[in-house]
Amino acid sequence: MRVLLTGCSGYVGSVARDVLEAGGHEVVGLDTALYDGCDLEPLTPPPPPELRLDLRDVQLADLEGTDAVVHLAALSNDPLGEFDEKLTYAINHEAGVRLAELARAAGATRFVFASSCSMYGAAGSSELVDETAPLAPLTAYAASKVRSEESLARLASDDFSPIFLRFATAYGVSPRLRLDIVLNNLVGSAIASGEVRLQSDGMAWRPLIHVEDMARACRAALEAPRELVHGEAFNTGSPEANYLIRDLAEIVAEVVDGSNVSFAEGAGTDPRSYMVDFSKISSVLPSFRCEWDARRGAESLASAYRAASMDETLFAGDRFTRLSRLRTLLAAGRLDGELRWQEQVLASSAA
Image (cartoon, rainbow, N blue to C red; front, top):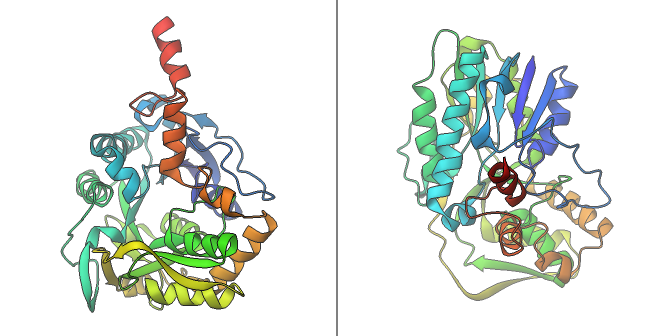
């Protein structure tokens, strides 16, 4: 298929492109390139997008010839969502739904939406939550995913199939690294400082999924028979990958010799705690299985960080933390208050 991959230059997209192309799909990447230069050297950075374009500015012509969309682009975590709730809904919900409407009008037949298990909120630890569980988002980011799923579901038709992959929390090595996700952060802290520093008491439950497994799930959703995935939501991860944050910290301390677990000042309870049932995706899409676990992922991250000479300066900088990077661009005047490139705003005004 000819696949439009939004967020192609991001943490997941820069891995997903290779996985989709390995499956024989033609990938057209779309990205506004907010994180250009945020690369984990010496890994090869992702190629530039074919469409360097803000998601809010996509036109019907940009989707000509598209068979399917894998929609990853978003303000992509809770801190970013809280940074500006209005922008979070404008980009994550409104622009994403508009993209799906254009894709359907252009003749695309599938729309794979990167959703999130964070929609379950404070589900507690007594039982696993499946796709029928009540949605109780605690953040603007999670709420934007709920709204998007509801709106996208209404676009389903005989010729257009939205598919919702409710991903567990991402981790793992990517050319366009992120340190603002839990396992990546814990390993980075251990390598840079010798401390596996927890920002909470570590007693929250969190399901995890490796970035490569996320990419393979997108491919599986594209390639599955339509009747199995049309309009369906799938918790996407592994049954073995529900972890206490404190247990993740202990794994990292074992992987990184000489490191020890510590707690940030004022570390308290994280209300976002949920254990997720992943049996549906295992039964409906038997071709998809997670290949990674947290220990192997931590070992891979530690190796990559050592190769990149990760130290406290690099760890604490803005290159690998999305909100910090955006604040740097805003302070430098390169982005306007709507997170649009200022160069584009000036050019538009001049025209």
